[in-house]
Every structure is written in C-alpha cells, then in structure tokens.
Image (tube, rainbow, N blue to C red):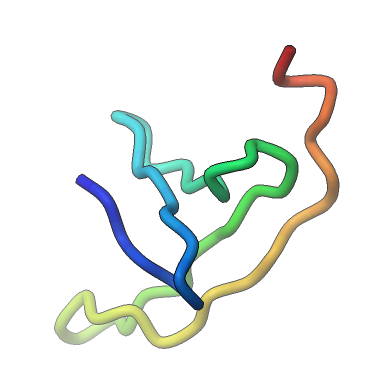
Amino acid sequence: MNIYLNNKIIKIDNVMNIYLNNGKRQLYLEYNNYNNNIKNIGVGELLEEFFD
C-alpha cells in the first residue's frame, strides 16, 4: 500500500510504521477514536541508523 504525501511516496509496512520513500524520517499517524480516520500526521526524528 502506498500513500502519496506532497508528491512523495510513503510506504506502510506490516507493523504500521510509515516511512518517507527516502527512508530518512518516520511519519506517525494519530487516529480519530470514533472512526479510525487519520486526524494528524507527524514527522519523527531522523532514522538513518535503520537504513543502509
């Protein structure tokens, strides 16, 4: 499953971590408790150590 955000592909893995396609920063989602719609998307710290 791919999601496009500002013309960049982000990838959802099987544990619902979401990464920019360059693999440098992690995005996280905040869900609405009533209907599971996304209500916020945040950008995490640099994650260079997770990628070659």
